[in-house]
Amino acid sequence: MHVSGWVTRFQAGLYILLIWCCPVAANADTLQLSPPFQAHYALGPTTSYWHDAQGLRLPALLALDPTFENSEHNRALNFGYTQRDTWLRTHIHNDSAEATSWMVRFEYPFLDHVMLYTLRGQHSEAQQSGSALPVPMRALAHRQAVFPLTLAAGEQVTLYTRISASGSKFLSYDLMAPEAFYAQNDRHNFWLATYFGMLLALSIYNLLLFFGLKERVFLYYALFAFGFTLAILTFNGLGTLMFWSFLGDSSARLVALGFTFASTMGTLFAQSFLNTALYCPRWHRAITYFRWYCWLALFAVLLLPTQPALRLMDITGFTASLLMLVCGLYCSWQRVPSARLFVVAWSLFLLGAAVFALRNLGALPANFITLHGIQIGSALEMLLLSFALAARFNKMKKQKEQAQAETVAMLKQQETLLEAKVAERTRALERLANHDMLTGLLNRNGLARSAEQALERSHQQHIPLCLFMCDLDRFKPINDEHGHEAGDFVLQQVAKRLAHLARNNDRCARFGGDEFVMLFEGLCDPKAIDELRCRIDQAIHQPIKLPNGTLVCVGVSIGASTSHGVTTTLESLMREADHNMYAVKSCQPRYRYGSAG
Image (cartoon, rainbow, N blue to C red; front, side):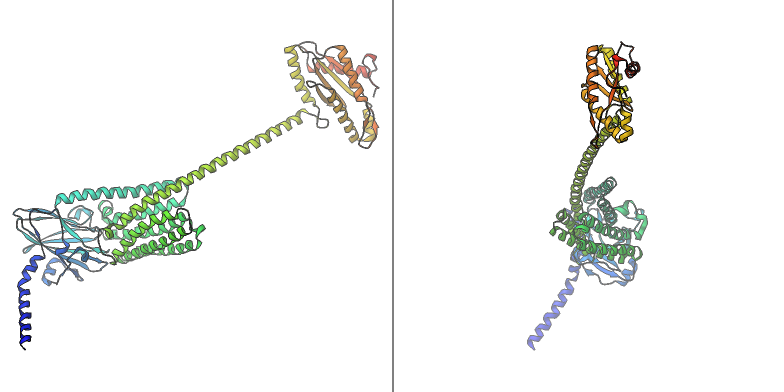
């Protein structure tokens, strides 16, 4: 009993001590602002919170006097997805003898409505902000919820903040000196401008590459970057601050639309970049099936309430991240071209997206990495994939140049062959136009061209010309008795004998039927002409053996003519030679050689 009494007395004393220390504990929960002031104070350790299921305003809240729970640190202010509004309460005391100015800043920009009440005794001041609020209605035109706060000398105030958000509630907030706030804001704006400028440049660059090269991989990447940029612009508050604050509560849906669309385009990009249809058809089919789910999810995001749409976005993004990462690893194991760089680049982005989704779902604590992981990962991923696409572009450019070079070489080869064929055809046509088909000698047209050139040389160089007109004798009986084929054979043999007797610069022609013409340059001596006439006569008189073995003989009547100065023409030479040939046929002794036909 003695021991039991002492225990009872000890418990009672401890209870009285705790009651006596309560005001001290309350003072410990107050943020004391004493000079020299810091530029930044975290409000989490001195903040308590309460979840409101009734949508109360401050007077009703004070009348209800609910029990607030202490957060102790910023990590406790991450509530994930909740339907209820959340109230935060913070006591701040200015120990300075002068009035001070501060900025209350919420770190997470994706908060729809933030209402800050500053309770001074029995009076309160209300300010509002949030990503779903039009910019003119915000306490400060900023991408985050920011509120100016002025404290009089020695003043203590209580801050009550009501937050409504369809997305994840990460309610870390702090107190900053205006100079520190604006300096940090300038740094953040610089990096955000650089980040979004890079995303915009990559989107436009790959879109232009698609229009120039007609390669769909660049289009898929541009659309992926576009959807991601739309979502991250809204998520960071820049989109609602600068472009679409008029959307109000619907602006949060742009985040779900953008990220879900980016997941859909990411599957197309992965298939095209890794060429899964060729290297891993099973993974290609799996990603195709998942993409159908992504299209359904994108349609559902348009119809579902905002918070379920955001939850579906997180699930879709996380699943897409995991699926494409595993696909990339498999392709890398299979040594698919560019797969390793894809895995490294995409893993960074997917890791950031997974951290972002898991933080939104409340599975990971809220800190700088989980809050900005998707931006850090996406920046690194964009740069690495840009290098990969640049390498792909250079490879395609080289392949295109090589193909063009091969095409040009092939075209040149074809052109050379065509030119050779054209030249050959031209020569063939020219031969047809200037040569006799049966004997191969010049025809009338060929004789005229050759004679024109010979006469021009004769006029310029005073070279004499001599023309023989040869008419076969006893040819018609052979043609009648043995047939036209035998007659053609005889003409061919006679043509060969005449061509054999001609010199290099002499011309032989079949003038028609059984008449032949020979044109000689540099021949004018009568004795030489008579000798040549005798040789021709003897050559033609030699027997000719027909294909059937029969021997036949033909004779020839030869008329000659020579040039007589610049007035000589082929027609005049032909007339004179023809006249002399008929004189031979008329048995004039000085022109008669061989038997008459």
